[in-house]
Length: 275
Image (cartoon, rainbow, N blue to C red; front, side):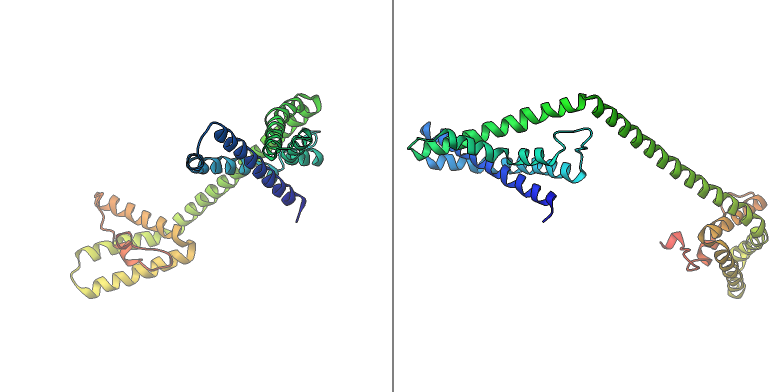
């Protein structure tokens, strides 16, 4: 087991000990107030889920902080050390031990247990709620800590900006490459677009199955060449050029999309109406 896993386990056990002591004090107080056991168990049963959720959230925050190694030694010269982390995790047990030593000479077991529980609660509250945040604030105010933190944040901002610039540069290169391909395709694909534009009226006007089949075969051959030339983007560019030619010649914005039907199954081309 690694040191980090050991600290997690110790913290989990110490938190469980803290909750156990808190529950003991609560039950003892209710008993002294005259509540029956069935009433106490009813109250504890309804609040068990809430206590479990709060403990889970707290443990998650602590474990996540340990995993991310947020305690930088330069910025946290005391709380970032291993000795302090061990002290922080075992503080409930230290409080219980102090309470036990403080109850030496007490004959009643209930008083001894109450002293141990109160020592645990007091020490844990003092260390986790008061001392640790106060030390953390003091550490952040130290000149070396502030200087290192500002440098670290500046480096993080510079790194984020560099990554953003790299992504932007990569995107610009992709867009530039697509534009170059588009211009090159327009020159090469112009004869194919004119031929496809001539095949569309044949498909619309001809009633002979042979003529339609011949037009479809020629369109499939053209689509296959476009796919081999530049894949799906090249086929889309050819279809767009063909549609634009048909609109210019016929001055009609509505052009029957036979091309999508003819090209269905070529490469990754799929007919939208059949998708």
